[in-house]
Length: 344
Image (cartoon, rainbow, N blue to C red; front, side):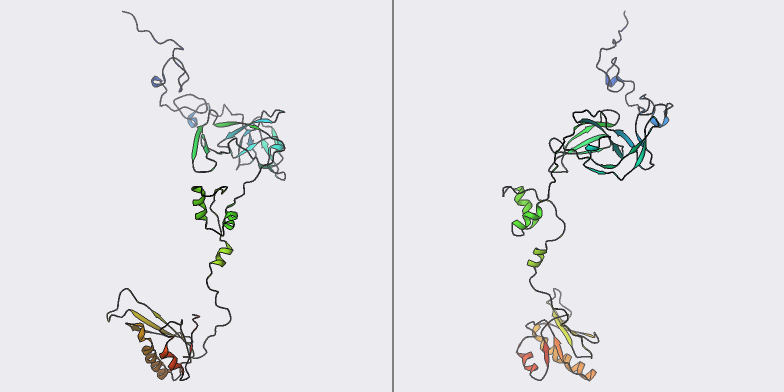
């Protein structure tokens, strides 16, 4: 009987866990065990590592407690090529190429301490515009880079994980003399071109391709002043023309409300209001029909004039048919003057 031969070294592909070639990944001893990001060994995490602090990364730190600089731009050749290292945990990135900035604030001054304790001066801060080849939107976060569609910003095309050192190396090429054209939102322009057509209708025209050369309509803020003026059916009441009463019964406001969906106990579906402009005293009468308005008004008039010793001079209504009829016209011939303009 012979012994079972062990697999020779190099027989298998490198294990993706421990990188050894003498076993398969499913048989790896370190499978499922944590790996320290400091010493790269298995069985413990970074906070419990005994070698913590002995292996410092060659990174750049700003001499400011709130910000940290992790990576810088290097390998800038004479041809204009550069490699940028994008770190998801870095709050700032740094380069020595002043021409790479689209906007630069040279008034910002500070110091940055490098890994060898060497201090360098920062001559400004700004923003760098990166024009992707196909116009996609890139978002770096966590341990991955997410690629969004250039039209639908919520549509994810791909999600790429970091290769090593938790950073992304990006190869850039500086294009001298290249003008960056700003994309102007033309939603308001097409709104005016099409006779102040509503924006929801413009979106439908674009989605169904019912018009040529119609761009994508974005959500807009604010209101169109011309649309507001065009939809205003009636001009407001002029200011300064209203007057207030200086005594009781000098001006009475009245209006009718109904029909109500639910009748009262006496099967009334309407009610009429009388409000004295001076005292703000209010009277309410219930009715079954609008035709009872004139009869109730005479009842109200006799009541208040006897109680106050004054006479009603002006009755202000909304010019409804229940007030603008022959009965009220005959009543006005006695010297009573109604006011047909509702300015409540």
